[in-house]
Image 1 (cartoon, helix red, strand yellow):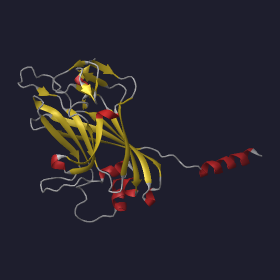
Image 2 (cartoon, helix red, strand yellow):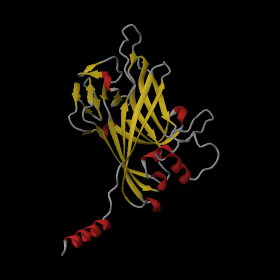
Image 3 (cartoon, one colour):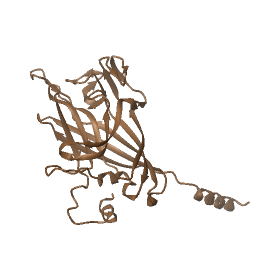
Image 4 (cartoon, rainbow, N blue to C red):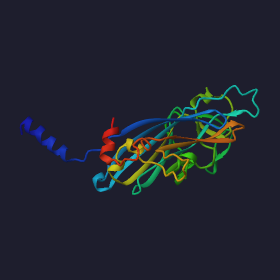
Length: 276
């Protein structure tokens, strides 16, 4: 067989093989202020990877990861404030999926370089060692978190899905500046917490073309039943903020929920407007 013929045959074979999905990625930031006037902020990276099925037929499948990083900054100089100000703890992330979509699995990874700080508290029914542990590789901590349905986010409506800590503030995420060489900077009102990014990975099935990219999450809006509420695509919950760490605070990303107006637009039109 000639070399040209061999190359042609190989190309024909590879053209018949299924093409693995390529991750589609967007990065969004959300910020706001607590009732006590303290900044809270989050950066989320959404990676959407098709894994099979037919999105045109409503049988698409995908792996979606939400990498969350608390970027609220730190409250350090609290020596003369009583009660002392708490550093904001990220404890929940809300998003929306289509009505037909089914979430079939979840993993949560604490990423390499992140640190876990503990006063010896129990977590997920087991003690976690006292001190500061910095991870040299990504590690699974799925049991510390839970996937909830129909979660309210205050002013920002009700979301179809949320990823939250299992035990209140325990296992929440703080800004990377809160620990320097494993030395705590300022007050944190939690017995065990993570400093650095974490990644929630979910498996989705029964997807159509209205949820086949990362950016589509920005078009899926929360249900806002009250006249003072705003539909939003993404939201996050912070706890342990303000004096004594007693307050909580929601922030949101409205995505494309409130920019189209009342005029009806086709889904194809909306995608053409916002594709990068």
